[in-house]
Length: 182
Image 1: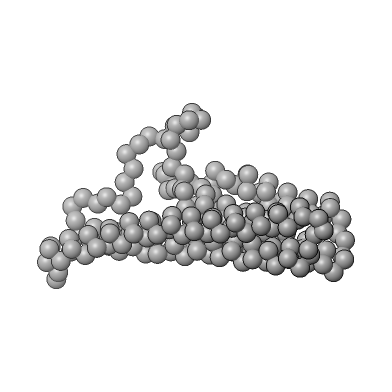
Image 2: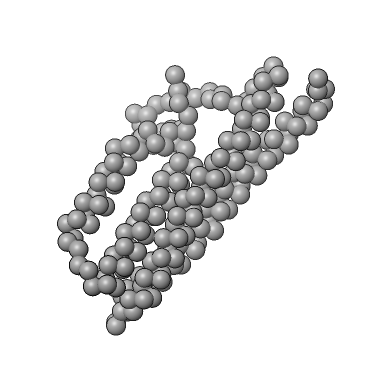
């Protein structure tokens, strides 16, 4: 059986790694946001130039899509490692008298619009990255179709954009909750 000192040391290491995962997560988010903003601005600049360059537009939209999808995957991967360290902490704290994990000491009053509420910044950020990916994929598809002179009815595109958007609006309160409460 492990001594209390070893458990405390392991618990301290697990907490440090958990904190580091969160710090690295936000650094990655800023990294991707910066690149996506630059590529998005470049894409818009190319689209507003006269005459337009269809190959450059397609390449920018492809890079935009690749970075947006990478950002989405990075968010999901970061959450995996954060949860991994949370499980280590829970396991190491299970032998202790007091556990810090899964303890919330605040009543939730969601009736006040400016009061705090346990939304998950990770879920919000991942949802944003998914929406950016969908938008970039639509841009890339439009660029590909226009390169081959294929016209698509704009009403079909609005349906493709509107349906997922309405779904997200309906599901947002359930998607972004931090923890489930009893």
